Amino acid sequence: MEKRCYTGYHTIEELLKQKGISGTLAVSKENRKVLSLIQLAERKGVKVIRISENEMDRICGWNVRTGAYSAGSSGGPKKHREIALILSKMPQKKSADFNDALNKLTKNAALILVLDEITDPQNFGAILRSADQLSVDLVVVSSRKSAETNETVVKVSSGAAVYVPVAVVSNIVQAIEKLKKYGFWVYGADMSGISILKTNLKGKTAVVMGSEGKGLRRLIRERCDALISIPSFGHVDSFNVSVAAGIIMYETRRQQGILD
Image (cartoon, rainbow, N blue to C red; front, side):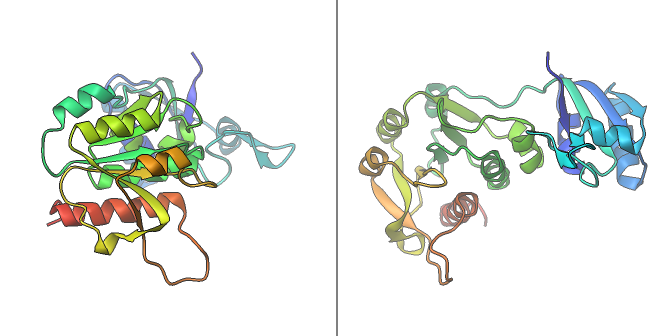
């Protein structure tokens, strides 16, 4: 099994809290936060090793010859903060069956986020972090043209990726139609839509976010009950998709009374 290396205090802490992990905590320099993570690792039965800073750089993907990070690496000099968690067995993340999740979501103030072809791991990780903070009930992604939950996603999400239930579906259009049958009002995020401040987002709500470059696909737009937008006053024409998702999730939860 391929081992995966994770860096970042918050990411490592959240991963160490999970059940069923197996691996090694590598440390090149100790400080108060690192010592607390060492103690947590020892309580969880995770092996702790001390290594040099050069070895830490190598483990985290820094190529001394080229002076750059290896493709897909999550660390590098000064980015690993002298600590890395190398896992041979990942914790069981909250994967969900789409149909089962819908059958269990009977509460009125439910929120589902549908991601249509979000391919950037940085954006996917940031979205999952916000979804965790705002207690989103389910994130739905396509089985194709979607970012996978890899090291980058887990790190950017500060470990939230292991908490947020994610359902993978083969067809987003069909998923939207099923959401409607279960009583969800489906909103597509689009610059041409009605302001979220003028939209009733209470009740069972599903929000669809389009891809980073193209936004919502035509068929997706046509299946949504309505299109919504975020009022803005700057010079650029749109928000980054992860920022937009966070704003819409927050406004939805505010209207649903979850934040009271």
